[in-house]
Length: 75
Image (cartoon, rainbow, N blue to C red; front, side, top):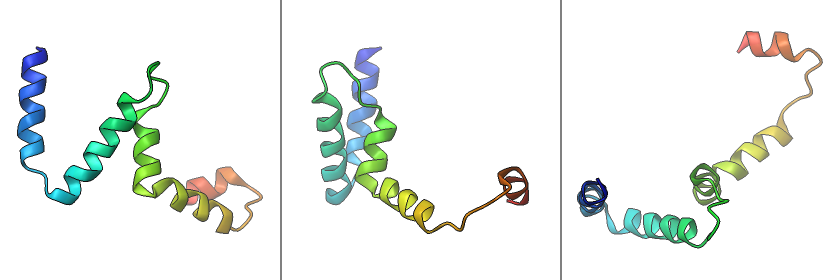
């Protein structure tokens, strides 16, 4: 199974542009740098992609809501 995963990884990497490859390499290096695997891939992706900052900014700019249940049902 390990060989199959490695083969699939090589196939996927071959399809990446140089820019994408740089980002993927950085992502893999971050995952490998934690010896105890305490870092979740989703956390790294949120940080690397800038989506975490975007989400925080949206929360800070959100108007206060008195009734969250009604607000969520309205979405």
